[in-house]
Image (cartoon, rainbow, N blue to C red; front, side):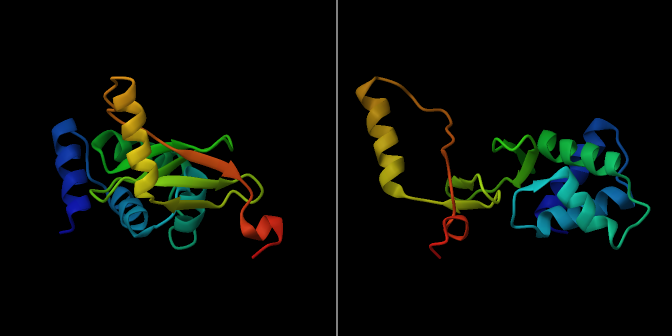
Length: 144
């Protein structure tokens, strides 16, 4: 059993909730995804093969993923809550296109070091941070 499935099943058992086939289907699709999914996007993906799956079930299940630590809620200024898989990998930041809503992840050790230096200069301990840069992607500027 994959680690994400075990985490979710253990969480559900601790909460006294049932692990249903619908939740497992949602979990499988969510864990396969590499994008930042909104409830609607995940619902539409799943609905093709699972017409009996309800929007509310997807919504509540994504909330459970966030509660148990499998997902993080993200807000990129488009009015939708998006869900990103949590990972043990290095921290990453986001470039968010305000034209087409594309979200690109990036890592840059220079930015991370600069943030640490700013914190040291102000005798401040960073516990967590998020960097999101908003603008236009190459497709939207016509400069691919």
